[in-house]
Length: 357
Ligand SMILES: [Zn+2]
Ligand SMILES: [Zn+2]
Image 1 (cartoon, rainbow, N blue to C red):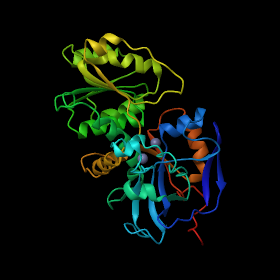
Image 2: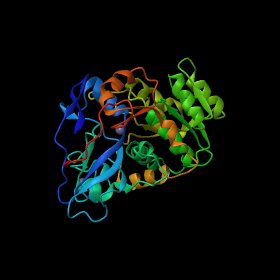
Image 3: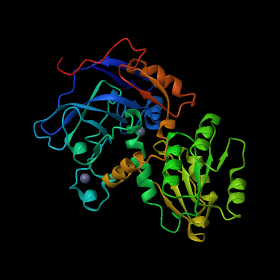
Image 4: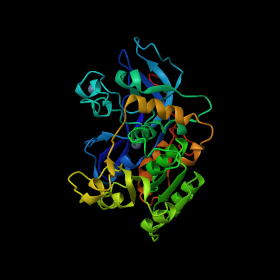
């Protein structure tokens, strides 16, 4: 099969590899759509601690089962599925405490290599984090399951006094994750949303998703938040940039007793300074959730089925597998939300071959 390998930061190639075969409890999926993601872009630019190079690349996908191990019971060949990229062990210290996102071995069975014709879903993932794809949900939208799961985990951690129907949320950043937060917050009932970003094209998507206020590079975010909240500050501030200076700045936008989610992972080794007064005397709380638990994946699966959200807006371009390296070179300019990599997409002169054929 054809698949994308990140040889080293900045060098992505399309290579021939043996077709994956399932173990007794695994399945192999023919990838129908895989989505580009900020994590992949980070890994492409500068490497990633969870993806040592050379590495198969891509982790957001949906497709059809083309082979199943003889002990697989819940799924069958021919079924369309959507999948997260990991599954917890269910037995370690953290899993026992319902902190499956921190499972000691969660990254060991991580699915990498979704920019490929086929990908294997190991038993651990299949057991808890794979769902049948509803027929009405296109593959490229079903592939949002993984990033939306991490957002659902973040939302689950927002304290009840903040997560109210009359809350005002400030989302900092307008990339794919920020937009998923916007959509998930609105779907959870948050009434007012303010999105601060840099790219006009993405702010336009934020408005299309119902953001009440969008702020660009030259706007005064603090002043706008005060104006929108009778001077109090936002109930919830969600940082989605992964920049230490934005982490430091984020608590200033929260109201007393508000909550700050630092969601964008920063470069390893970075540190931030925080205004202690805000946390102690103003009662601002802080969380920095990473990854997700099976219940968050289930919640994301439910959200993706909601007919009142137009998930298609997340996919702003499509490309055949062979063009993945060019897509990543182009993503640098930041005009796309997500590009769907579609093996066999028109324009590609290679059509996928079934495994074993
Ligand atoms: Zn991702
Ligand atoms: Zn575990």
